[in-house]
Length: 126
Image 1: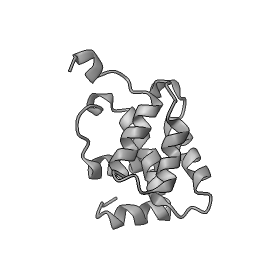
Image 2: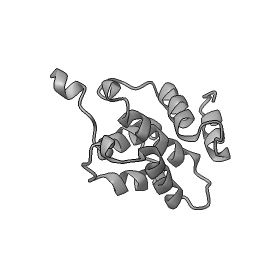
Image 3: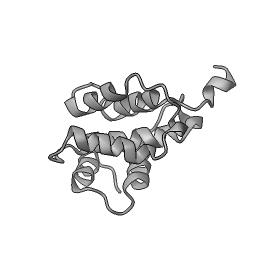
Image 4: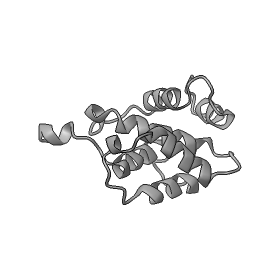
């Protein structure tokens, strides 16, 4: 793989796709699929979005207005984290590490309860 491709800044679409594959590899979560479909054609570099995590989390909240699906919020956070760590983009992401770091970065100490429940169900400490 050429070095320039390995370290290039991913697009919003690529970051969301990679996060969705990490969180929901079987494509079974409708909310995660909806998040992916919204950003599927977004070819902006992740660095072009002023508040990437905030934008993605707000979209996830719009998809799940009842706030029942912690997985879609975690996917949004993971997409932002993956987007901001392009050195690792083309390597296998360790799912637990990405989700732990992504949710900490996106939510700080104020984890939404559904995200806390999602992480706990996956055995991820937060």
